[in-house]
Amino acid sequence: MIVKVPKSSQKYKITYILIVLIITIYALCAVIGGNVITIDPTITAILGQYNGLILEYGFPFYYQLFTSMFIHAGLIHIVGNVMCLLIFGLRAEEMFSLPEYLGIYFIGGLVGNLLSLALGPNVISVGASGAIFALFGACIIYDRKITQQSIFGALVFAFFLFIINMGENVNLLAHLGGLVFGLVVGYILASKRKPEKEYQYTINCSYQAI
Image (tube, rainbow, N blue to C red; front, top):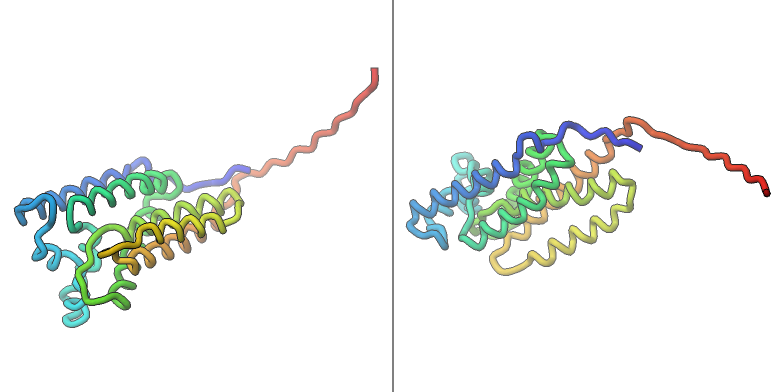
């Protein structure tokens, strides 16, 4: 069976572009704040997702739902996210077209941020984790579905990765929102892929004793 897959996003190397953009923004924030190890809280309050600010004042601060995906709290935070984006992003490039990749990444990140806004505490959230979890979820469910394997293993793996990322100051709601979105979209995309050709072979064997 040959599965027809849309034109890959590898041509555009979108993962590398996102990584360069994230690192560049972090470097600018570090220069402005005067600290490479930890970003100035004033900067994260402006560009991160400040739930209290958005809920109280609304429209002028909706931009934070998007900009928060590109801001990181510190050096360890950005290194961890960049490594995960490199792993799952390059894998996603092999599976999805450029529009699909970008949709999973940005809409998945936005879904995670909205869930955090609706149910999370009045804190400032930063990071690309929700978007990266969306890519991860889409990749593992797509791979299982497209190869006609049970998706239970993918769900267990997704749950396991979610659990091991629990910790202090971790926005679990953003992770969960992105992950669930990615799982749903990856499953839908895999279900819509149609075999281009399917071959069936019948082999008739006859034996003669000598």
